[in-house]
Image 1 (cartoon, rainbow, N blue to C red):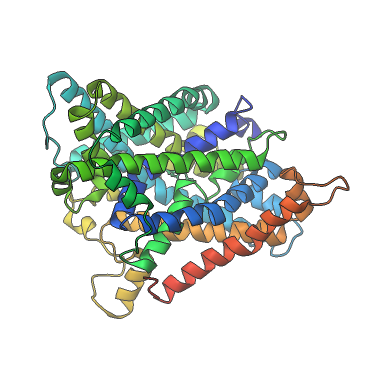
Image 2 (cartoon, protein in one colour):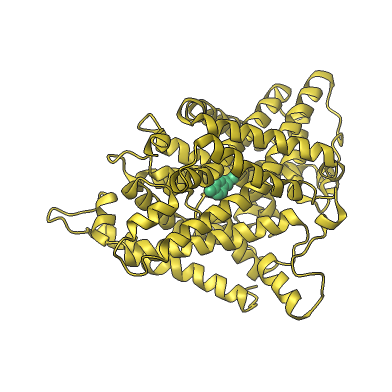
Length: 481
Ligand code: PFF
């Protein structure tokens, strides 16, 4: 069992793999459009607070459990909680993570598939000329065979790599491609400064303006902090279990968090600059802000950027790759459970879990226009008031459509709830000395040092109270605006 998981080869392996998991569509696709929808500055500020006060401690907590037990989430909790209070409860948190992984991967694969088609269009534009408005996003996402084909292609690619093991393929590739992605983003950022809309974009991101819907915005900022850092579902427990004992968990977590935040902010700056510079792009985008990454950027590449027609196709390959290193970690959480608990072979575990996930992916892929029923789907019906309406509002922010519902449920509920229990476990139940030892925070007498006390305070109070408070408020229907 540990043969299969013990795969990152280099000492940098963990940081790269974990950063690969964290940096993905959450940064390039989701963060820009939810920031746009939530009107910028105020939302960004809340988000940054969530990253620092909640995300960072939960990240350390997950890695502590993973590295200490050297197990995937369910057995990790079984081992870590042995003979401790509520021993039987904690592994359930691991199971919850597996469900979250399944739910996230089913819609993530759909969006990841869009990068394949963007790549195809870029090749076409680079060779035969760019046509503004060539891709009508609404028509594209409503095309059933195309959506299913792209999703299937991406799912197969993910499954293939997971069956093959990871070190040889994804770890090596991450080492090259992550720096390339970062370099292209820096280039795009520099180029954005030459456009008229740059000042407005910066002001939009960094001026703390009030949010349109405060309650929703708070939950979304918290949820996105979990989503973007791959927290709350045991992905970092799984990856932490491959981490060498000598490496610093604090430094690794800080590096991952910093990189992830930087990339999300750069991506938003680039896209908003285009939106402020070319008002016609905003018109074309209309209400479907979810298409931002795929609709706005080509405009910049092909009309405003030197060598844009060479960089554009490379960029969308990298978007696909960033998504791939995240889908692999999502699938790995599910697969490693089957391998560890049911003793299935890696191939069987991957085939079965990918099959089940793809069945849900089909529902997501068809819910952006291809099927009217799935596109308008609400779990608790379409009532405008009453209990069913409240349930839809509380759990799905009243969003219609299968994919939107899955996205909201996983990012804003499953992950924060998972993270809540993970911090409680490491903060209150898990022996402090062992945690401090994992963090390299013992003093000469072998007692937890001052720095550990700070981390412990975040884990015991700040993180769980913040998560609990926001979730309770949303459940009670309070408006934060
Ligand atoms: N962090 C990934 C992103 O931002 O795209 C998404 C993700 C990957 C979430 C892995 C959760 C996870 F376990």
